[in-house]
Amino acid sequence: MDRKAIKEEAKAKIKGNLWTIWKAILLVGLISGGVSMILSSIFPATVTPDMLQTYLNTGKLPDGYSTNQLVSTLANIALMPLTIGVVAYILKFSRGEKPEIKVIFDFYKNFLPIFVVTLLVGIFVGAGMMLLVIPGIIIALMLSMCNYLLADGKTEIWQTIKDSAAMMKGHKWEYFVFGLSFIGWILLVAITFGIAAIYVVPYMSVAQCIWYDKLKALNK
Image (tube, rainbow, N blue to C red; front, top):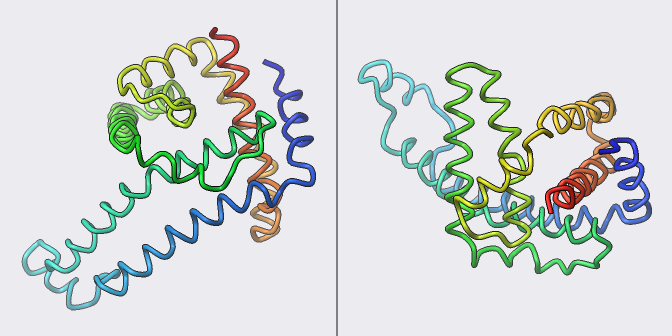
């Protein structure tokens, strides 16, 4: 695929439309941040000296901290459909549609497949990383289209994983290089203390959606 053409197309699409992308990203960020603030006000969020002493004496953290970890994990799980919702929103935008903000909430009806696919991808990539870093990266690339397939309405758990693997066959290195091509933009975000992210985040997000659509077309 023509990497340069994809990136130019993404730049053209986001011109004058940065807020269209950002309003979905910010809404999910506000929801996630609000949940985190509520949880941190109820459960201890840091390890205090007393907790550390308890850990040194018993090898275990106090029950309150364990509860915090559990609740945070459950909160992250509960917010998974919003992540897919944002992908779906940007995917619609990249296809020339005018997505409504409510689309980011539509994927709670697919909560189970989203949770299971995300869990399985994490397990597979984690297992690959434990063996050697390279196999982990290869597996991550192989399954990198799962979120886009879920955002496209895919609900069959194993089929989603198989479809991602099939789509990426012969394209893993190409996608890896595509990702690396944004390093300069990521560095720009760093040296501008995040200011450049106003442009870079929508740009990269739309470019990745376009890449997915072109890959999908190749696999028809």
